[in-house]
Length: 149
Image (cartoon, rainbow, N blue to C red):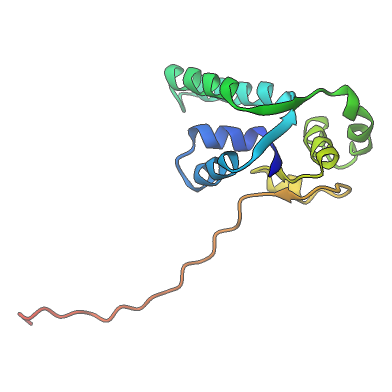
């Protein structure tokens, strides 16, 4: 299955060990990946900021950068999507609209951790975000008394 993957999913897949990272890695493993060329620059920029803030080490950021360059990914240039990107300017940034335009053209979903993007009006592609957490069922356990009581 083809999917457009945004930078938030790539970064989470590289650095997040929590729920978001698990979801991102499952998305990345199960699909043929596509996106605007911008995804490389955005992902690199986030890795840079994380390194500078101390969230990840220099070694980790460099390793993730190398992993990024090894991903099998189809990259799409701006010009063929410029008209559609411009049409979406009222509800999306140019950057987000580029992801949407590629997903629309490929007739595939866009995966993102940006839930705001999934609510943007005027898009015609499916935008998939991390599913909400389902509250765990409350389980009442009977107190077990030991033989000493």
